[in-house]
Amino acid sequence: MIYLVSELVSEGAAADVEEQLGLLQKYWNTMPETLLALAVRVVIAIIIFLIGSKIISVVRKIAVRALQRTSISREALGFIDSAIKGGLYALLILQIALQIGVEAASIATIVGSVGVTIGLAVQGSLSNLIGGILILTLKPFKAGDYIIEDSYENEGTVKEITLFYTKLATVDNQVVLIPNGTLANTSLTNVTDEPLRKLDLSVGISYNADIRQAKKIIRDLMDAQPEILSEQEKMVFVDELGANSVMIRLRCWIAKENYWAVRWRMLEEIKYAFDDAGIGIPYNQLDVHIVGADGEH
Image 1 (cartoon, helix red, strand yellow):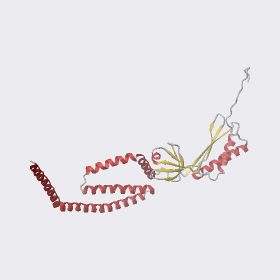
Image 2 (spheres, one colour):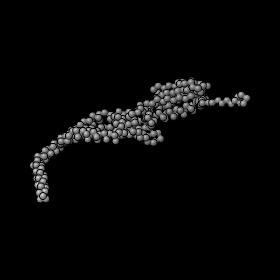
Image 3 (cartoon, rainbow, N blue to C red):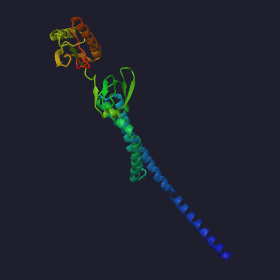
Image 4 (tube, rainbow, N blue to C red):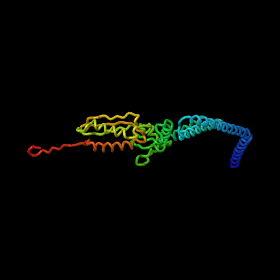
């Protein structure tokens, strides 16, 4: 009985060995054909890569030359060139993968999963990146402009525009970094976009003062300022009859770089000129009446 079992085991083992040897022989016989097919695919993939690389290089040069004819900034040009390069090489690699036998469904699944993961991870950065591209392309402001951003009321001179952040320098030389996504999705004021700015000042005078004299003093001061543009409209008028004063208003045009210097100088000189002419600039007054115990004031 033991002998019979041993013989059966030996026959089974021999059959397994024989089957394995048969598979090995079959694999060995088909190996040259498999290697040849693989070599052909590899050669075709290399040829596709070399031709594709040349085509990508030509397309990039054409795109860069076309963009250079526009007023696009250097940062935006570099980013667009990199995006074109990355996208075209991704398509090239996809074509090579299909050529060597990778199934399109598998590639689509992998690309979709990776895309969703990356998108969720860099959602905020992607918003800033797109905002940076819009700012660099559309140019609502540029380096050197003074802007006021409405969402958080940040303001200052634009020092640098990158793809993700815009750097502002405040009047006291602090640096504010604003995400481009915020700037691209909110309203803002570009104070210095135009070459000229309108100076608009109001000053109150006493009801007892001579309005004509006050207006003449202000107009003479305006005419004496070399930075105020004489070819542009200059106006001095009564703007309001207030509770405590008559409001005199002046409007004129100045080159944007001279705005603050002229504004500060005009306010100071108006005060001195009114003092010399005896024209009072009133301030809010409060009359207090004290009533005694007998009801008399």
